[in-house]
Length: 217
Image: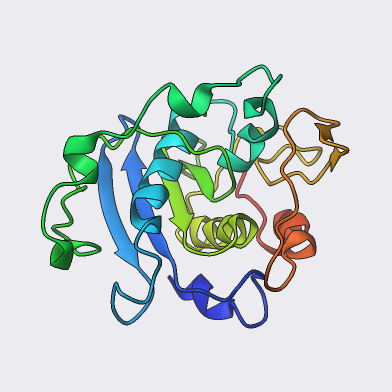
């Protein structure tokens, strides 16, 4: 993930190494990778979270409308219309805890080929669309602040040209993160809090549709 290498300047967050996972449209894990020299450099817990983020973005996006995991945050809080969604589809334990740790992040990662399940309601998961706008799955990135994870996921999706997002909840009609929570309430209903710790990611994230525009046809 070359995008992680921008951490000192262009991603915000803590500058951590990252886990990333991809699922297909059926929620089956296609790949799990890490960006550091060894898997011990990344947060171990972020391997499963990255796959669950990919699953969430895929599961709640449609052929004509994309929702990032960041967009789900506000409505999943107490009193929100999706409150409880985080527990509605727990991760598949036969996938989550299978295999040998030395295979984690490799081509034969034990998550690959299995439905991972799980729902994550903070930033770092994006749906994947071909340049023609066909929804083919989801991407999840985890290992830093949620906001930095979102920035890196967006850049990775852009780099692999699977960002043909047809429509989203943002004012720019993308699935970018929205920072509009004031006094605990999101004006749009799709907001996400700013992330504390490390370098701020808010301004970087807000500019993503300009710096790394979606390939909408």
